[in-house]
Image 1: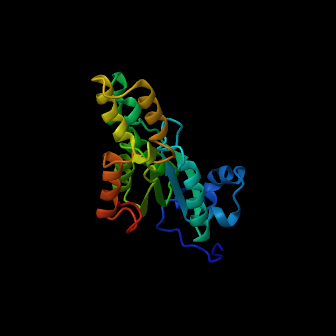
Image 2 (image 1 turned 135 degrees about the horizontal axis):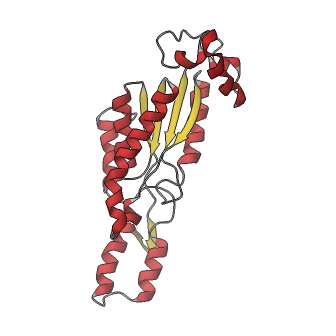
Image 3 (image 1 turned 90 degrees about the vertical axis):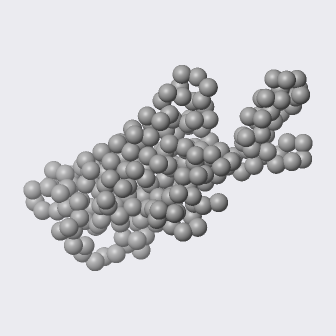
Length: 228
């Protein structure tokens, strides 16, 4: 249940858009989106994700954001969902697109920070699942200096190939075997269709899983929520 207690927002950023007669124009936009008086005068919590359809590491984040929004509302906050970009190394590598990868980290951090500051949100829950989106989201949290929690989208499940568990790492190795004639076209194709059977980040200790562990170690993620 949401709290019915009047919140003192005198020290919260959202006071600049929700409190006092001079902010009636600001509030009118919240009414346009269906918010109630109570929701407008509660703390406003940004729920940021790097959801997109570029890769499996991001594809489920929108669904996870809905669970976060329910939790925010249950605790007496008003969630406002927004998204940022990602450039996925697993698809961007090996061609001109790789030059976009590291730059995307800065764009993610900047876009999250701009959204939070521009709309005077009081706190942030950030959900990310791909290599550069994790550090980008965490960089924004540190720069904003508002209460923040990082949530990892999670690692992909292993697939099964000829009775053994496999991940994308096995496909990389298989390409090498194929190039020297140690793997057939049929086996390579079967492996690539089986190694990544679900949503989630690359199933190996690459950047995403490594940064997820870091998120716990530096205290931005709840204990036991993101590490291996």
